[in-house]
Amino acid sequence: MRHRLEAPLRASMIATGVVLAAFMDAVASTALSIGRIDMLGDTYATPDELAMVDIVFIAAKLTAFLIAPLFVMTAKPTACLRAGTVALLLASAAMTFSVDLTWIWICRIVQGLAGGTILVAGQTLLFFRFPHRYQPIVQAVFAVGAVMAPTTVTPALQGWLVDHLTWDWIFLSNIPLGIISLGLVAADGNRTYWRETRLPVLKIFLLGIGAALLTYVLLQGSRFNWFDDTDITVLTATGVAAGGLLIVWETAFRSQGQLLPISPLANPDFRFGLVVSLVAGFALSGSTYLIPAFALNVLEFTATKAGVLLLPSGAMLALALMLSGLVIQTISIRPIALVPLGILLFAGAMWFLSGSTSGSGSPDLSLPLLLRGFGLGLLFVALTLVALQGLAADALPFGIGLFNFGKQVGGLIGTALLQTYIDHQNAFNRTIMTAHLARGDPAVDHRLATTAGVLATNGFDSPAATKAALPVLQRALEKQVATISFDDAFFALVLLFAVAAPCLILAKRLLGQQATPHSQIDRH
Image (cartoon, rainbow, N blue to C red):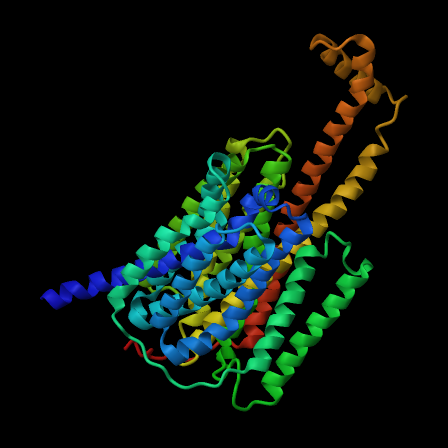
């Protein structure tokens, strides 16, 4: 009887430890989105130099997604999870020791490698330790830390820390999380062994180079007008060449020392899930970039208020994650059945947001944000189960790594394209609206006179009020330009799914409708 009681408690402790470790990665992943301005002041770095801090982190994480499975199969997921948690804890603490930029880059590389290892090892551990029938709710719990936290909870937490303390506290908050996580994962015992393996060092080097170069291009390309800049063109060509060489080497010359010694791509459900993960990552990261940017730049929210804005969406996301896991587990419906509803709810949320104005406030954004959270919650649990639940035990870590790699790449592409689209729309909308802002136009003259009258009642003398009226009107025009551009970007996400939905249906048919039989995963 005691053993029966201990087993569920031990399993709950392991699951909680994995979620807290994933939450640590969420804190590290989103740190610079809120703390960037404060770090610029303390490090005396240029925006370009600080941008490299994010680039090396993401490149390291992408690399870790594809090499961590090798270590998981070599040393068991529990050992890899502990190693990743310790490394992330120490690197987060080390970030506060110095404001030297080289030191910060090194810490961020370690954080990226550790974060990718945590996500791969932690999710693998959950698949190994819990029976197949419990996976829907288990993966929903994991997604709370891996999907919900970086898009909602951590921006709110970090906004508060930046407004009330300093950016150092963003990273220091990982220390107690790491200690508690390690304590909980200890319930899994000493399930560690070492199996000799041959690491493909040259392939890892190619992967790291390609990931770093293409990450730089995607994050900085919009700023330099993409291929109008020679450096961006050269870096893109080099990154694509490195990635292409790696793919050819991996697929055409299979021998010892493979990144994917056991490929999950033979499973048709995994292939479909991998394709959809790119679209889902695009939608998740794209909307996560747009909403706070709209709140900060157009609605003029504080960092704290912009972070808090996403909390209701996060709560709804968590609710949808748990509800979808519970429904799949208890009713035994096919996970793929929830995907269309998730897409529909998310597209509806973006359609509502596309009607926002410069006078919108938190109440106006509440409904679309709730719909967004619920739609994404349905989408991510379903996709995880579709892609991963049918994989054999030896292919599972490699499938998890590829699946996360796809989501991250989709997110990078989404953010890059939306940034470019907003820049393009700003220039386009400004040109159109400025053409109507000319003296002699009755509407413009009336607006200038009204603005000058308001300024005069606030203490300006008549000549000064008349002179200041035009700059005030120009600032109002810039705000309207930004509002229209963001609305266009929100609507672009609606169009994304309008185009992607039939394409995904076609992809499902082409990649094969019959899933491979569920494999029994060795949980011991």
